[in-house]
Image (cartoon, rainbow, N blue to C red):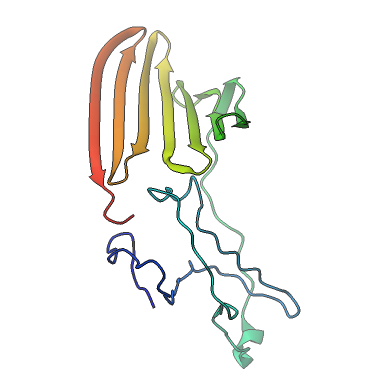
Length: 216
C-alpha cells in the first residue's frame, strides 16, 4: 500500500516488483440510486491536468478486480422530517452594459508527421461597463497545451492573459505570459508581465524559476 503524495513522494518504484496502491478519491455529495452502476477508469496519464512523467513507462495491472469502497449511509427514521432547502439568496445583480460580446473557442489539432497533439483554448469575457460607476472591463485568456506522442518530456504549456480596465480617456492594460516546460529532473517556469497606460508601457518584469521534480 502506497501512501505517497505529491508533497511527500516515496523513493522510486522498483521495476518488476508488485505494489498495492490505495488512492483516496475526492468527496462527492451524491447518492447512487438502486440499480445504478459506477465506472472506475484507471490511466497512467491525465494530461494536461496532471503533468506527464519524465519518460515513457510501462505499468501493469495484475489479476484480481480492483476494489472501490464507497461510504454507505443507511436510511434513518428522522429523514422523513427533513425540510426542503429554502430558495438561495444572492445580492442584487450589477447593472451591466455589454460593449462587445463574449466568446470562447476550443481548437484541438494533431500533427501526424511529428505526432504532436495541441489544444488551444481562448476565452474572451467581452467588454462590458459596470453602470453604477462607469468602469469598463475585459479579460482574455489564451492557453496552449502541447505534447508529442511517446515523448512526455516534450510537454509544454503557454498561457497569455490580457486584462483591461478603463473609464473614458483613462485606459489601462496588463499582459502576462507564462510558459511551463520540464526536464527529467525539474519543472521550468518563465513569465513576463507588461503594464500599459493607453499604449505606453509603464512597467515590465521577467521571472524564471526551476523547481525540482522530486519524483513527480
